[in-house]
Image 1: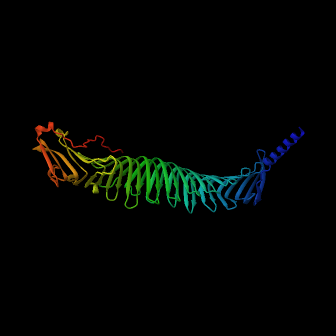
Image 2: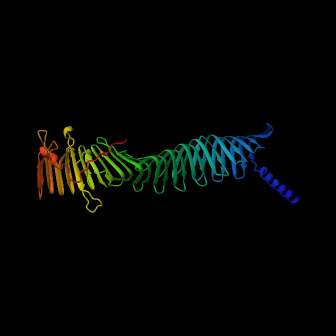
Image 3: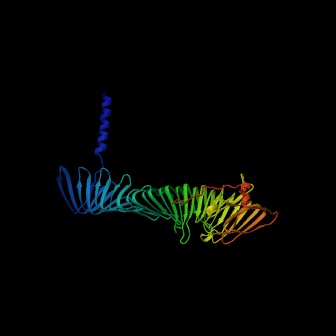
Length: 473
């Protein structure tokens, strides 16, 4: 019992020594000094060349009020506080000896070998080497600048945690957000809320983002938008990885590309995933439920590659194209659309492809009365040429077949059914067939109007699609 009592008494004494043994703030110098008691506390007033010290913390100011009992000093005028390589400058501060912190008002500047901080006011914790600054905060370093409404700075690691109108400028990017966690030595920046990242060639917008300065890489999520600096290309999605050094971007989940240029129709591409390759030649790869739209050119497929510089698109994985009243299907489709005009379409059959299909072109009639009559062309490879967005010429290679309806003075007059090895079809200004040439093994049949009920009016592989895409803003 006695031994336990002695142990407890020793613990109490040790605790008491810790509580009462705080290092006191020492007055080192003052031109004038007076003492008084305020609310039962011993107070000293010091004026002129005032100097205090607490361990390795040195304090200088024009005048001060020292509350001796509570180990606190109110500092006024040209306040300078030093600790090793730290300098703290302000016009007014309160230094708390027990907590070893300085609360600064009326403008504050922190300087150390790594950075300079300025703000309207702030608190510095000497034991934790931590600054908490507020109001027009700016931190300056040769490699980065940060401005914000509030900022917490950890001197030992150079980590910064900023809130409110935050802007981080580094050699690789300018990052803006509602709040940012900046890890200087790791080269990582975590941004939250209304994020934008501007780099050499792009601007990224998102809800959240992580920037890796050494790799020049950014990862963004939530309402992602990336645009080129000239704003000619805008891509959106729900998540993104951007590699600035490689000029490569990948967007996932509801990706959308929009290309708008003055005097030209806008290009729209929608897909599940999109990859942007911004080196020369610049091109974009879309995967999964792809829809490509430009002017009257509409398409759907599983994969599309859009070449920006020569304004062309390659479609694969069950592609289908609609151009006004025309529908085109095949294993692959390549279209040239320079200067906002459809110039050429190449529809190809790929025999080695699993489930390969014949290339097929269906043309509807503009006359509402004949809307159920479809001209058809099929073959292995089909090339279609346009002039002023009007069909001008069609070349069909291998296994060529054609059905087209005949009209006489706008009255239905039967159909022509033609087969051959290679077929060439020429169109007039009214986009009606003027001439058909079959290179070898030609076969032809004319079926008059009164016998159409007994004829097959579709070619093998005919499939009229009703899933034409539409623009989504």
